[in-house]
Length: 240
Image (tube, rainbow, N blue to C red; front, side, top):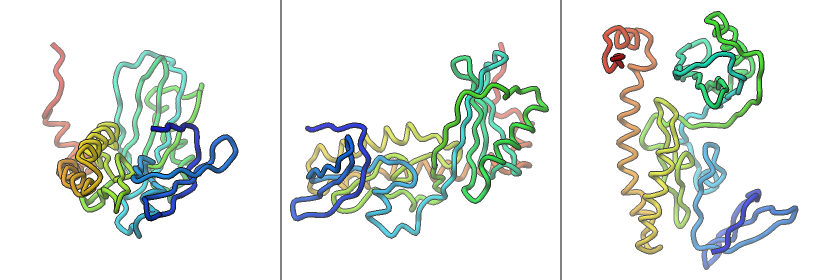
């Protein structure tokens, strides 16, 4: 197996033997031949776009995350539900003596203004965002229907978020990427013939999980229902 890293994908063409994949590496265009293509290129997947007229793409968000020097030692994770910022959610995570502030925003909104508004609101609660270290950003999917999970086509398979495998309630994607990759590997172990059907069958497990997560969303993202659940103390953690 020939491994290549730090390359820019350009596209592929179908051939009688399989596919020719083109990419840029060290400033020059390289073409490689393969029988199988696996797209693990996340939301806005170019592989996914190239193999289907995908009108059933999951809803797309922009995740913006800023790192700050932590003025205080915070030992808890914070989830923020504010419809003025996003219909998804925002978060604060303490990590390695830093404070991470992030939000999942709709592309039509001005992401920078939304983040500034979020910081202004949180400063009223004592949070300090003066010493910024860096800003990160990426597109993320939010699948709201199980039909938006797409295994692939012909000898091209998708894994992780490229396939639409990500939690619609929390945007957690690592476990989905690992599980879908495992399912694809198991399907390929039995040979190339029929591997995509085997993989698609295994993905039913993830489709069920996404369905359950979507059923949970109203309780998380409806203000009144969320208030009632928090007030009830269901699944709360008691210090002993």
